[in-house]
Length: 238
Image 1 (tube, rainbow, N blue to C red):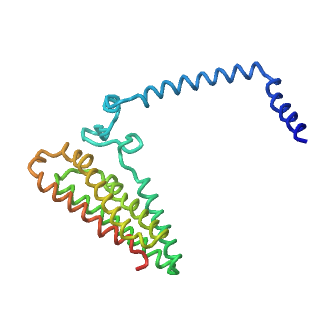
Image 2 (cartoon, rainbow, N blue to C red):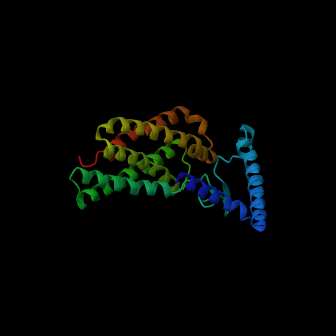
Image 3 (tube, rainbow, N blue to C red):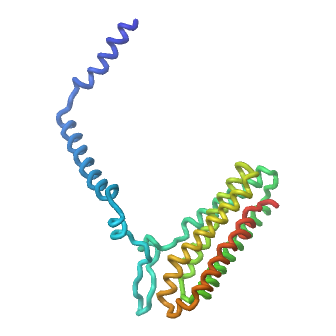
């Protein structure tokens, strides 16, 4: 029986070699050459790039334009570095879903309870936006687009979603994960304010060198404020 199986396998392996198609082989060969050449070009350009290429081709600042004689920034559709509301809104929805799941696991889910979490989340977002706007006003009085500040404030729900996921998977990890996410969110906002928002305010302000110490205290205040906000969002059903 095994001898017949071996001969049958040899027949199956030999069949594709016998049924050759010159036209198909030509197309396959041409396609392979094109793929190899294109991948080689991109590989040499990207994988072989160093710091000089990144510095020369990277765009790290917002794209500006002049509209009606006034200085402004291009919207997210035209600027890859512009903040948008996609991630904040998706994180907001994810947080509500995870909060509802956590309430259901603990037998506390009701439409009223989920509505309360929705209200608390919106209030937290509003407080975050007001905090950012106040700090920007104290730092230089630059007029930044409100939606940009709303987008940056909404990233809080990315950390809140991670906290809720940790509570769903293992409730004992709440304190450790919350402290870690508070630290990460504080570092993110401080770096964002220093490298993006404050840089934009400086373009409109003339006395930014006079308030360096106050700037540091305000950035520290913003980082510390993430702890009560995220602990508030993480205490679902309490």
